[in-house]
Structures are given as structure tokens and as C-alpha cells.
Image 1 (cartoon, rainbow, N blue to C red):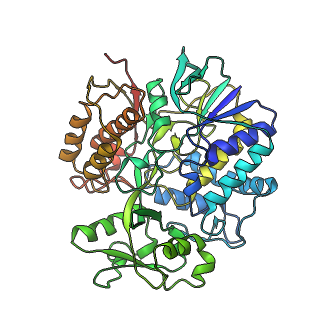
Image 2 (cartoon, one colour):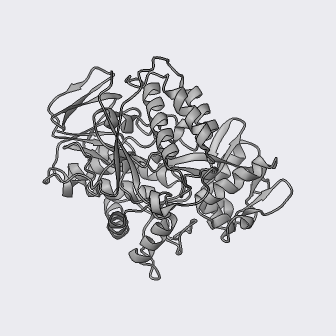
Image 3 (cartoon, one colour):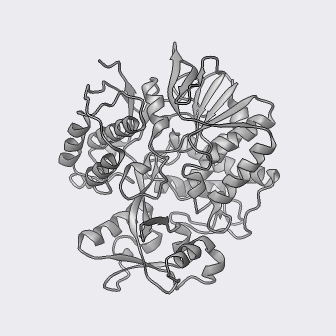
Length: 483
């Protein structure tokens, strides 16, 4: 039996593709329709237009990745994107006819379904999985069982104990909920990365957490204002009425996400407020019905200025895998946001996340059970981490506040050191969700402190420049035995 942990777009597409190829498969998930997939609003990047090509898509990906993309991975995913779109359409999913433009893209190549692509696609895949008779169980995996560097199974909070798994596929999403301001739902606390790390797998690029520039919070409800709003003409202004984005980057509102997030964050540091102006968008109500409905719920219209703040959005780091999804533990795969393929480099190109998830999921039957290769780790340094023997318990909200204060959009060595010392007093070796969250936060802070440069989504105020001579390499962690 093949077990898939997670029911987002990566996990469901893998389950469906494997089932269609006559593999026995079961999905274990904390919550059906949980995670980021359902909340994804942009779409899937694929170079299907006549004036576009996978090569141009790859160039844009590498440019935004700020010198740290795995070129082999980039070439693979941008080429396979066309087949992924075609496969979804063969399965019966319908995209809107127009392609949209998002920041960092040189062409309109974002395939979408209105402004709620993730919701429509997740619902479609769930319906198809049910039709195919795929078993989906709501439960939480607490630990993986590994012997001789081969995954054998797992245990869950619901009392399930598996010892004879043919393969385990992690599709658990990322860890961007671990910051006070975030676009992510409650489920994204890094469980999958923590599970793999505790089992002995190599994890990498944890310092690279992408902050989305335009999250709004109105009457206590958080809502992601999709990047395609800016692609369709929305602009950002501060409370002085200034369209400030061009001061920070020549592309203004279509600058890469890391640049725009820091620009907005800096406006707030200067004591200003930042708003999105939706009035320049033609046919707004038709193009963006979910945004329009959100505004309507709060008594607003497109004519109102909508307050925005940057929020943690996408965790680039994760379980290090190759393009087949193979981790450093035989039989353990990771796909989607929990995986670190090198596609995104130091900064993800918009709408490449659903692309990565779908390509890995759809192509899983091509790779499952093949001669094991595992990821190439020669592009970085693998550091063995001995976890501290702290005993303090810590609530999730405290973790989120600490990460926002010390591990946020703009980082500093002294603050990172302070955060690490706090987490060293915490019980990091448990199997509770908060312990996983603290562990991932601790490792992220360690990687951020080690990377003494600014690159992509990682910005150090004390090292504001990129340093290719020392840091055009990845930081990998592997767990050592602890006391």
C-alpha cells in the first residue's frame, strides 16, 4: 500500500494518478479541505500561449529565484507544466479562457478559474478521488517509522500503526502559519517537515519564507488579495496618497514579492498606512468574484481603499528531494510545499507552487518504486543538528508572535540569536503540534543566522547585500541523536 499524508492539490493529484495506474493508495489527512491549496487564489503557471515558451518561463523563474534555483529542476517543471495542464483538462477540469499576468512573469501564463483556482481545483480533485474510490482518512500522523534508512510506516493520534508501507508520500504543505501575519490557514504548521527531520531526512532552504505583499485583515477576517489584482491594474498607495512602489523597484506593483513586501513593510516603519486601490481594474466584479464577495461581507466596495499588510505566505524550504520526489530516506517521498526541489531558489515565482505540486503529483506513477536515486546534496553543506534538551512548553500563538518579531520580513543577527536562545529552552523533541512548530522555527532561525547575506525572500539588515562567493549554496540540516 502507498500512503499519502495530506489532501491538498499535491496529495490528491498523486492519489488520483496512482489510482488510475492501478496502485493501491490511501490518503491520511489532518483535515479534508485543509491547508493552503483550498485558499490558493492565483493559478498555475504554464507557457501555453503562442508568444511564450518553457524556456522563457524558466528564465523568469531563475531571475526571481535570485541565484539559487536548481537549473535542472527549473527546466523539468517548466517543461512538464504543459502536460500537467493538459492532464487536468483530460480529467475534466475547466480553466477560464484568458491567461493572467503576475509579478515576475514576462508573459501572461497563469491558468486560473476566476480568482479562486485552488478552491475549484481542490473540490474537483476531491470529487474525482471519491468517484475513483480512494480511501481518505482524517487523522494526524505523529511519527514516521524508519529502519535502516528505509521508511516502513507511521503512527497516528487516532491509534493507527502501519509497519508494512510500500512507500510514504508527504504532501503536508508548508509552515507559513508560524507567523502572526499570514495568508495561511491553521493547518500549515510544518508537521511534515518536522516528521521527516525527526526520522533522519535532510531538510534545506528553511530560511527562505516568502511573504505575500497584500494580505488584508478586516473585522478580524484575514484575506489574501491575489497578485493578479495588481496584474489587472490595481495599485498601492500610502496614506499620503502616494503610489510609492516605484521608489523601490522599476516594476512598481509588479516587482518580485520579496521587494514589494519590504517596500510595504518599510512604509509602515515610517509610520504610514498602505492601501490597495482597485478602481483601475476593468470588470472587477466579474474577474474577481471572491474578492468582491469579501468586500461586500464587510460593507465595502471596489471604490474603497483596502488596507494591506505583508503576511507569511509560502515556505520555500522543506524536505530535500529530487524532481521525482525522493528524499534521503528510501521509500519516503515529499511533494508540493513540504518538498524542497530547488525550483524556487531563494524566492518563488508566482503560481509556480501549484505547478510544482501538480507535476509531482501527476507524475508520481512514473517514479514510484523505481531504482532509488535520492536528492543530490552537492550544492550545499549538510550540517548535523543536535537538538537542545529544553523542557519548556510553548503555545502556538507565542511561537507565531516570536517569529514575526524576530524572524520576519527584515532580519538581524542579534535578534536571530535571541530567538534561537529562546527556542533552546523549549521541548523540541516531542510529537505534539506545538513542538513541531517550535522545532521548525528553531531550524529556520538557525539557517537565517548562518546565511549572512540578503538573497530573495531572506533579508538581513546587518548584511544587506548578496554574497555569491560564500552563499550561493544551500544550507541543509540532518538530525543527530539527542539526549
